[in-house]
Amino acid sequence: MRVAIFGTGYVGLVTGTCLAEVGHDVVCVDIDQAKVDGLNRGIVPIYEPGLEPMVKANHAASRLAFTTDAAAAIAHGQVVFIAVGTPPDEDGSADLQYVLAVARTIGRHLQRPTVVVNKSTVPVGTADRVRAAIAGELAARGAEIDFDVVSNPEFLKEGAAIKDFMSPDRIIIGADDDHAIDVMRRIYAPFQRTHERVMVMDVRSAELTKYAANAMLATRVSFMNEMANLAEALGADIEQVRRGIGADPRIGYHFLYPGAGYGGSCFPKDVQALMRTASEHKLSMRVVEAAETANQLQKLRLSQKVVARYGEDLAGRTFALWGLAFKPNTDDMREAPSLAAIAELTRRGARVRAHDPVAMPRARQILAANTAVEFCDDMYQVLGGADGLLVATEWKVFRAPDFQRVHSLLKTPLVIDGRNLYQPADMRSQGFDYEGIGRA
Ligand SMILES: NC(=O)c1ccc[n+]([C@@H]2O[C@H](COP(=O)([O-])OP(=O)(O)OC[C@H]3O[C@@H](n4cnc5c(N)ncnc54)[C@H](O)[C@@H]3O)[C@@H](O)[C@H]2O)c1
Image (tube, rainbow, N blue to C red; front, side):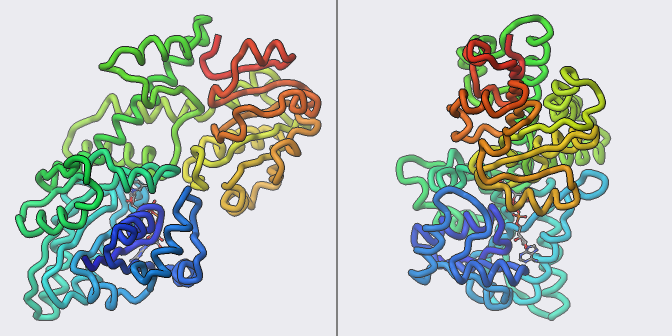
């Protein structure tokens, strides 16, 4: 099928590339000229395992094109996806300006019946607003063209986005028109050869499903983080507790890891937006609110542990930091717990020397104004003379470092492990002063 996709970020680029990979004819549109020019030269603007070769191959095979020409893309697409950002507004609600701008653009250029698919994460009722925005532009042109608006929220995980898109757990289609449902089934048929993954539901339920999923996952993380903090206070070991509860199939082992708080472009903003939606309906989401508050506090755990060792004033101290990205296998720094740790440590007068396998270019931009932060290309280079090592992201390369070398480089052999990568007993036997999250 001929597909147009608005927004060439983490979701739009992966969606476009994977749809091209299975044979669809895809045009990706973005307003960022530099990004589009780069993509046309084979430069992929984000780090996502497996993405770059797939972009290059499909671009070379002429199934994947990049443009800033919205009219041409709309003329191309039998189906037009909206995959632009929905960042938090000042009051925490999802800012729909980009989604609605695309809707108006579609209305201005639509020439024939089209299915418009909203893939951005948007509050319940947005499909109606997208429909109204397109209809308004058509009316202004005096044009009468049939179109459908479908909700198709995305569940890919950064760092495993290609795999998630190619083998989805489920494909949620929120639609009330048989033709639109049929078109969506044809688009996604290549991704469900082993079994049916499409779930068709009404538009509002589809929109809410995305928020419900992220709020549930955020709650699980915050629950484990609070349990870990309690375990620490009680002298219990959260790792053993985790295994003990994960064995219950009603709980399961997935997504049960305590750490330095959740970050990223989705959980924090989607949790906020959900609370905002609830309050607009005079309801409060007390569980979700608590998950969010607990997360804000958890992001301070690493720096609190440092303060517990060295006191409130950290002037003259230097800390090594392994990991900047909000999770491994991505360069996404949005809401990363590392940023909270850096802000706290440097506010108290410390210097931070940081290393991340892929997120340093992005981190350099974000932290340009903070002169107390230095970046090193080598993970061992950050350690020299430091008053301790903090681990903020569980990159594989940090899992089994040369501990002797780490020990000999640090001025003080303190390791504060925000991702529980190491075994406390092993670390202590090697002479480290070791602290994880919730470890006995
Ligand atoms: N990142 C994720 O892991 C993820 C997962 C599931 C859902 N989502 C949701 O998907 C949506 C997109 O997220 P993202 O992380 O890909 O965003 P992003 O910020 O990486 O990319 C958004 C892109 O849209 C472009 N854009 C803005 N206005 C445009 C316009 N009028 N026309 C064309 N392009 C335009 C921007 O230039 C940018 O390249 C959000 O609603 C997000 O919540 C994200």
